[in-house]
Length: 375
Image (cartoon, rainbow, N blue to C red; front, top):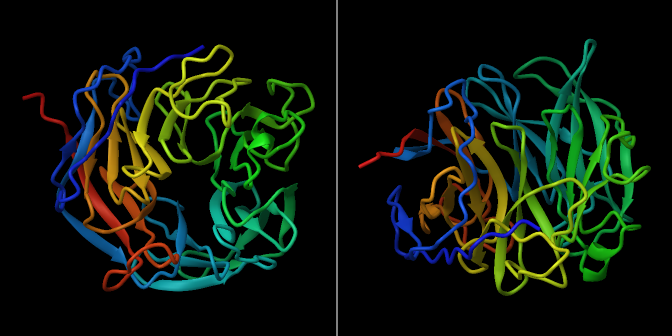
């Protein structure tokens, strides 16, 4: 069983702009130093510096950022309407198309986006809620930057239980070229401990939804279980998978994901030290986090916090506690991804019915990153 020490990540609510807020001194169990996402094993950790830059605004309940390349376009999903929007390299925001069959209910709708380029086409993958289920579909992304449209969808995986909350929704291709998906318990905690259910799990599948031969359980898409509502996925520089997860009333989690492991929900929330379950390496009170998107850049994980309205920076290879940025500055934060040229891109989420919209919300924001000073 993997054990971590508690991290009480209480940050001052009044933090402004990029002023960092640190937690009370914790005693985390540090992981061994690892190479970073760049070619230099010495790079990182990094932190936001300077003034944030607004890349796009006027988004409606956005959920996922999908960058198509440093000089290409960026796609953004809008949860409630099922619309995919394109931010062009010239800074224009346009509609790519509406994903057919999306039914918004509570936290459900058009959620995570991912991309796969093959020899003859580019596939856009989407995790979405329909009238009957949550599912993953893929559709050809037709055209060129600035003029993309959507082709006819193909079902990759369907039949996932849906609900007004705990729908999961993040999808990402891993370093092994397999597609990973976070699936919430859809409001029924017992599903997370039921190996026959795909809810309350992190799934691993081929690009067409097949079961990889080397999955932990033969014939099953389940990669890990015992999850409540995971919404963040990222790999560190060693290829190790990590996931950010919503707790219920007490602890949100950052977990190091091992194949076949059980992360305890609903028997354990946060660090429980209970035999048979893997504890998170980091945990936060739910009022400080409610983490959705997760990104890894130069030895540093960045978690986008909804209820906590801040950006958490975590560097597992050091003994430093997590640090919070942007406390309350932009409101609820839904997704975060590596940007071009040493930047980080962040998506606000104040128009989803739970936030207080700021002028111009919702927004896509760019933050410049710089090494953390050793002094």
